[in-house]
Length: 396
Image (cartoon, rainbow, N blue to C red; front, side):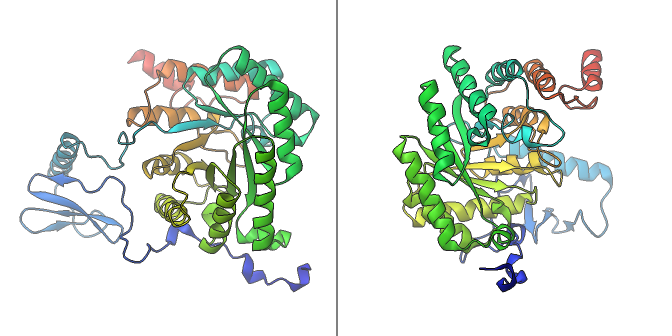
């Protein structure tokens, strides 16, 4: 199809932030409701409405508020009752196993124009720092990008194996057999299995620019799946820009991934576009579609960026929505305004009961290793590793 034959209207993105629930399904609300003595906090048109025993209502977003002391007492009682009942805004700590964290620093993190591709010694130092803060899986990079990327990936795998670091292995590839085969070469040379994270754009904007259609997408996913299977490697289909992709296109990709034997699906907020309601809607949709395909054993990843400053919030919401693995980078480095910040994600997940807590001193050491590796300064007000933050902590 030539560019002149394309309809520009076809490039309009879908907005999962405004997605309607499926028929017969109420909008998902993690954590349920908070109950206060004699009253209840109820969702009302996307806002919280406080139902008092007297029958009156307090609308925080409009109308007249009661005296601040009364409001604080009511909210405090509601929160205390909720905690006593084991309730929370988000259902953390309820999963059968902790959510996994995948460190994307050495792949997506170094794609940012303001970071550097670290020297190999620094990469190895950062691997050990990842293991020290409980990272489960590391992305080794993009071996098909060139000889250095290939050689570095081999070196990193050998270090992980020889040092017995408890890190699962992944590497990036396009949905091309040639890219997948480069990952297979790394696995063969290093003597360790690697999961292929094969990515393809799923949004109308990319399809309009490239002239891609559903048949091309399905063929590409099938090609990647066949190449991974031939090499004996598991693969994950990474749906780039999934948060701006229409349901029908995602259905095409999900079905192709299932048919190609994918072990996982990764939902990407590539432009940092999504809000928490959009996260919920997209994850619920993916679960329904996989169930309809009889593929409930496929696990979900979440990969987010921080263009609107919502990267951490979206990642936490994705965990609450039940994804099994969430991605992040050290210091939040990455393209444009960066990715979800890994040390803040790990710290918050530990506080919320979704993972084992990690001492802040260890997280600060991880930040320092990343700063050295990436030639990236740590902001003075960084919540964990900033000079001002640590100064206040010492004084406290």
